[in-house]
Image (cartoon, rainbow over all chains, first blue to last red; front, side, top):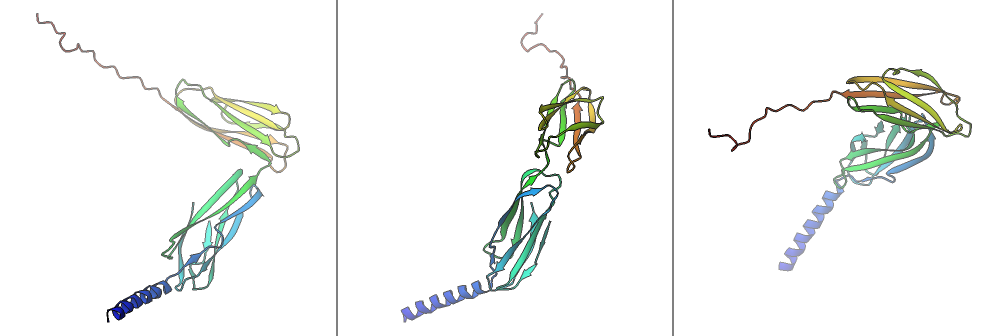
Length: 67
Length: 173
């Protein structure tokens, strides 16, 4: 009986953590830096980074602060 | 400057575009941006872009700043280096601080390296601002402007304290 109780509690704990993990977003950046090499002065530097949401909930980009 | 997708669905891909204006920059630059998301495992990610900004004429500094107390003489040096194979020629075109700061333009390496030495003439307190404009023979950079700023502070004289005899030296009569 005791064994069954321990099994049940463990099962519920694992199930709970899996459910919680399933409802969170996960941001994955394939690249975080980019080098343009040599560029003429005055030419703008424009680069697009991608971010993949590997989670189970919508990923929100709250803000981007240039530094 | 940055543009980005606000919400990315599960399994989806979003874009973050960074833009940097290189006007006025020279040499290596690194610009970064901090991206804040609702991912509880990683709230913030730093993205960076780097480049080497090539200029036809390199200036060791575009600004000269004189700061000090009155009566002090200051010297500031700006080196100008040609970054193209063509020999560089520089001709003074306009100078607005003749009374306050003197300058000397010397050619260190023929057609390649020049040095401008600025010396403050007027060491009286006050602020001033001006520039030296040089004409070049490079089509890509027909003129160079070096901006000069000065702030000379008034010397403070130490306050005179009244003399008082040390304790114990007072005569008793």
